Length: 269
Ligand SMILES: NC(=O)c1ccc[n+]([C@@H]2O[C@H](COP(=O)([O-])OP(=O)(O)OC[C@H]3O[C@@H](n4cnc5c(N)ncnc54)[C@H](OP(=O)(O)O)[C@@H]3O)[C@@H](O)[C@H]2O)c1
Image (cartoon, rainbow, N blue to C red; front, side, top):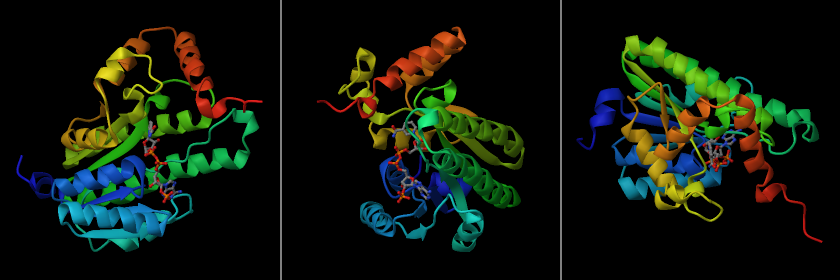
């Protein structure tokens, strides 16, 4: 692949929503390594500036920071104003709200925030960038979903439901937009550190690590592999196996894992 194959195919700029930290910062860096100029969006201006500086220093590409709250109604208008002058070839929706805890113990406001960030904003921004890309006859969109989207998930009930919305949103868009030259991908991610063994019991995960950088690189190599890709082969194998099992077993098994997460343990003493 030539260093600018993806920008040449899709357009010069990548917009990454949720790019100040975590996987989003890795997606921004991977896009830059492929020659995209990168617009990074998040709420924290300082964190965005730091990440953008690292991306520029490492890859020598132009960057732009967009400070915006994806939970704000009408955020798509602010994003449009900040990007209308750019040839946007790649849009990655990575940001997420993650209400964690038993559904009834969390304030309703947290569940509503989850819907705003994980459902409303990706819908509005895919509508905006999808239309622009269809007009250009080229482009790529990736929505970052989760293994939490594949079954009901105790302790993350509304989060899992919202990630399922994103999963299916991207798959449907893949089918509608491909006839207009636009690739759409649902990217199913698991916790990158799940493969490093700290609290993993599965030997194959220990043997097959996935860092945020590896998760990001894999996305950039599979943009035309829609409607769905997994960030790790093990997850794809597990997902396929789970699809053939009784739903109650699958949901309970996932609940056993999430209930045991350290963050839900009662404090000692
Ligand atoms: N990491 C995992 O374990 C894992 C597992 C499965 C799926 N995923 C998925 O992978 C994606 C990234 O996860 P992550 O763990 O890397 O997340 P993270 O470290 O919490 O980073 C989330 C990013 O989104 C931004 N963001 C959050 N809320 C926002 C809002 N209201 N408006 C604008 N920006 C907002 C954050 O920046 P600011 O705080 O500066 O706004 C940050 O840049 C998510 O879609 C998540 O569902 C992650």
